[in-house]
Every structure is written in C-alpha cells, then in structure tokens.
Image 1 (cartoon, rainbow, N blue to C red):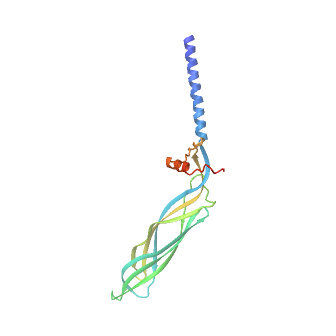
Image 2: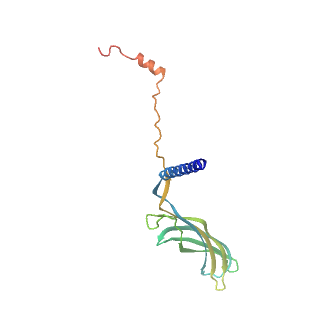
Image 3: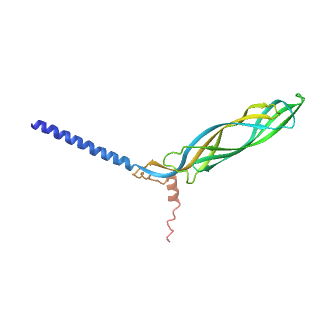
Length: 207
C-alpha cells in the first residue's frame, strides 16, 4: 500500500513540474514578441489582357508588313475596394497598298482602364494611407493583324500587368528583454607616446 501511495505521489509531482515548466516557457515565449504597425506589401496580383482593336485607313491596304507598340505609360489608383490602372500606348502599323507598290505607316493611340480585384492580407486596411505600384510583366505586343473586307485593319494587343499594394499592417516581431553588454573602450597609447610625454614635461612649470 505504501509503495502504491509513493508511486502516485511521484507521478503527481512529475505532472506538476511539467505543468509549471510549460507555463514558464509559454510566458517567456509570449513576452518575447510584440505587435507593431508597419508598412509592407498587403496585396499582390497580376492579370493578363487580350484586346481587339481596329483602325481605318485612307488607302486600300494590300499587305500588313509590320506592327509594333511604343510609349506605354500607366498609373495605378484606388477605386473603392479595388485597384484601377489607367494607361495608354501607341500602335504603329506598316502596310502596303496599290498592289504592294507603295507603303506607309499608320498609328493609333490606345487608352485603357483596367480594374484589379486584389486580395488584401489579414490585419491590413486598404482605406488608409496606401501606395499602388504597377509593373509591366509583359509589355503590350501585337499578336495578330488582319485586313478586313471593308479595308479596315484589325489587330490584337496582349499585355500582362502586376499590381502591388503597400499599406499599413500589423505584425509580430521578436524582442530581447536583456540589454546587450557594453564594450570596454581602451585608449590606445603606445610606449613611444608615453616616452614623448615624459620627455616634454616641464619640471619648472609651476615656478
């Protein structure tokens, strides 16, 4: 009976010791982190676009010889809970006419307004002070050009844009409660310095 009682008592104290150790470790862990508010990327996303356009020309085109896009400009902004991007670029189409005996280039400025539904991370707020960063992941390029029956030139422009939202968010950082030790700073005085000091002492200074 005494042996059984001793075993139960040992088991009780072991369990109590483990509980106290867990509470201490958890308390130390909780105290080692603090919550701060900082600026970080709170949302990020990309979107692919494929748009059809057409342009009318004065001549009756025979063959399209080339198509290129230049002067791509864009700017992001907040639109409620979404992100908008206003942009523009110039499309230049080189074509021949009069049975390929003459060539010319026609250009068209394309304006666009694209909307992004970017998912915001937890503990972040889009209504506060935020910065919108827009990146061109794929520059606008002409992927297809056709001459229609009515003489107009139709073309397809493809592009891909990426949006990053920088705003205020809450995050936990690790801290150290103990202050780092101070380093002792010793003046570096050489034997030659001490010798020069001794030689330059004026014993009669007080007189």
